[in-house]
Length: 337
Image (cartoon, rainbow, N blue to C red; front, side, top):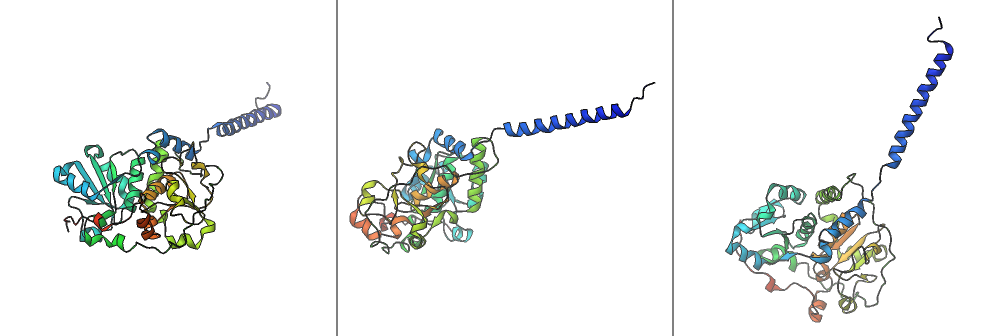
């Protein structure tokens, strides 16, 4: 009888086994190669522009102290006030009915309530800048009734107004220039890697990451900017008329609000390999914008207190549609301790 496991049969069995192994490994590699790779920033940008294009349509969404006061008088159940300040500052004085929430826990808070049951959700901080950053992220998540309190608690009562009055400055008035700097060439979007597959999942992961990091990373002071002008890509987010008169930070490039930061216009002229500095009149609009750009992966920073912290008197003298602090912004409404 012929042996079942003869030398020739053993060789054949080994060859078949090797063939099966190579076939399996080859298929596995092919499967990995064929798995579609997504460009997360492109996917996210497309989703945001197709779902309201908030930054280029509605932003900034702000609410005044007077509007909040009126709504509280008419029907306090229709407005939800979120105060992002530290607990000690909240305890020293806050708008009646406000809840104190840490920025990092903001999305969880929205998931714990029914946002649609409110006509407006107002986010509050010291000066309105952190609130603007937070409101922008919530709006981008699709909560379309979210607003930032304009001027922050400084507009609610004189006890809080130093958040603004101490920051008003003319220190850079003689350094602003009027010559135009052209925008940079178009390039790729930044690379982001959340590991998620759908646009909504990518958006949520990015929002969570930015909330966890806090607002400070998204800011820069005027002194920091002027100390390294040559290494920054500076965006003047004003109409061109104001860019030319009273002028702008040396080297700043003019981007027209709600027009120039679309995928179809000049968004991709922002560099993905250097810090993008944004400034507006107060730092609030640029905070809305920095949240959006940081979602897409840009190292975007808003100049704290905007032009109010650089050319305050010059804005008042020109008065061509500039937004600058006036003591009449402070309403002296009652607050709760």
